[in-house]
Image 1 (tube, rainbow, N blue to C red):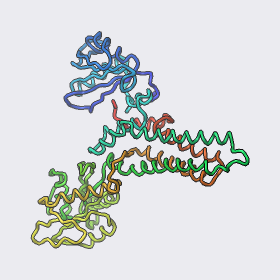
Image 2: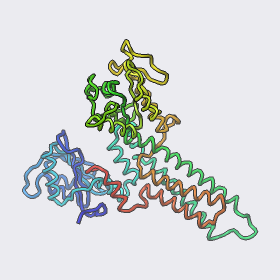
Image 3: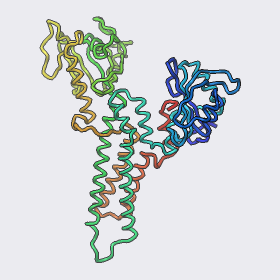
Image 4: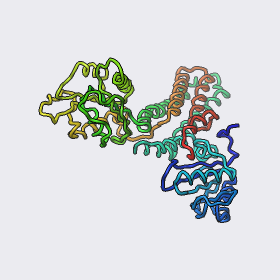
Length: 460
């Protein structure tokens, strides 16, 4: 039977660094009697067994059956519960070859360790109360951060600030729920106040929670852009200078530049950073009528990418001017960033209003283009509207649950405002609290664990 995340009785092992050739490879272990099991694969074994937590021991990793030396290593010992997973744990720093890593893993599996599932170390940290689901997701987000702002965002979420926000909101929901249930158990006596004044604070408290959750929900756009990166597509007719611009922005000769139309028949892409945002820059095939064949397929793909882009950079050859195809494309994509290329040429026509003139060949005014891209990204992420940095969510799971919580709170708020039966309103409050509990993992099931931790790297 296949192992599951809830099978926490088995000690686990995994390579925590990328496979392949490197200076070092780190192999992680965790679980009951992890130190003793690792000692079977270590010489001198007594040095490892007697080591305290947060200490490092130099020695040799050996085959537990034959005693053959596998590698010279340094073992870092962590004693539970004061470890990342909350369990006893040993991490081996080995020489970074595939041969060493393979033999080391085989030796440790021979000592009783099971190969870890993706993200299983982080799952054990969660199940042992060392972290919650928001912080666990932040671990994965930090490991996959494509740019510095994504790193900053993920590190802030890992610090527990976002978790504290959600926990405080859930406590407020539970406090409101208890107050309403007291009212249900001890209704207002006849002749006393009808209760509107006593219910007004409930509306204010619900409104405050609603406003806080709305801010978090809005932050997702910026968080997603930072974490996943923005798709920026370079489009235009053949020979407009798209490949030259791509090479200029990437600062590397990646695309073939040729005066022959149709040189680029499929897209070429590169990940770069512009203004703190990760950008997937794509150079597309020239847009022109192509009846059939490879070029026609390239044009079709270019149109498809343009339809999905966060930003379109549309180039026109300033010596030729606007064509019917250019005007048609811009009419269909009015938000495109319009570039008038080849301003260095003597026969370049004047730059039209609303266009940015530049020379992709010589690099003239590149800084203006990058500034424009940065502004469009910050505007779409909401950063341009607010100069104050705030914590952002980047998880689609969290975004869905935040929106569901908002809907429940709005239902409760409407119920209190209209003096609906109190037992109906409490259902909305309880539902809101449950959604918040699902975000942090106070309420969660195995399916949620598979979805979250299954996307992690091995050894994480």
